Image (tube, rainbow, N blue to C red; front, side, top):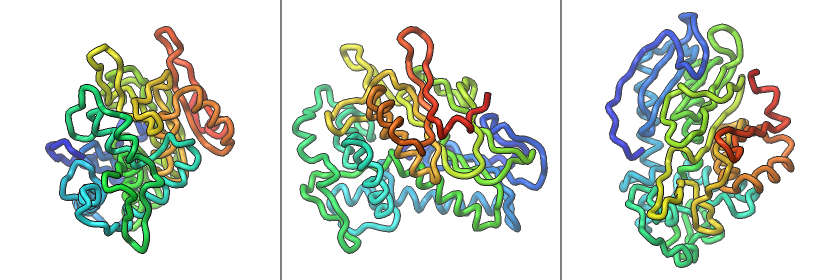
Length: 336
């Protein structure tokens, strides 16, 4: 959300390479920018031009950023974090509730009060502190320190701050899906920065096909390196990884943007990438972050106790290759 990008719109006759679809003119494709990252839509919308659809999407973009952005100082979330207001809107209330549901599964590894730690490590729009005082910050991190009562945010400590970057993009993908459905779409894929919600079939009448990137450090390509492809006909899909947003500290240690709220430190392990499919993209987004924050061993233990969770892990194998874990519920979705 923070980066200022030149907005462009292309009305295309084919979808992006990662989607793997092509052909018929009954689908409208719109590419552009949303939440400061890439936007892709392919949908059989009815009675609306691509320009009208994009205008509606941009209105949703403004609404989402005005509510949930930690990079916009004027957003409602930023004002809540500065204690300038205590009123929450429907977006923040929903995400807090969902975060509680995911947090209950995480053993403390998923917590949206992590913002002060994310900021101290340099991933919330500020320069990293050389030696963050993690113990002091942990005193005001913890989901039990904040609650909503009658539409108002109540903090146990005014220094508590919320960060929805682990859930807000997926949630906005769900809002975008609802938007295209309001224009009559029965078959569609919507994608914001690689997080996806889809329904129905692609132009060829088959499942939507989504590529999962190979998670080597610094991979900023747009689908050039794909580890696996996944079939999806209904629901959301999100991938979390520590191979893009990271830096090396003065001692050469990797510091990644996923922070373990129990320790206050970067959650770096041999678990490089987590892809989750779920009924909504918000759920997939939060679950992916949760597993990544757990680290390889705990994430593998946890996912094996969740038989209904559709998850695909890519792990470093200790050499230059990768190991993979595909949960039983995900296996039928993997393209061979």
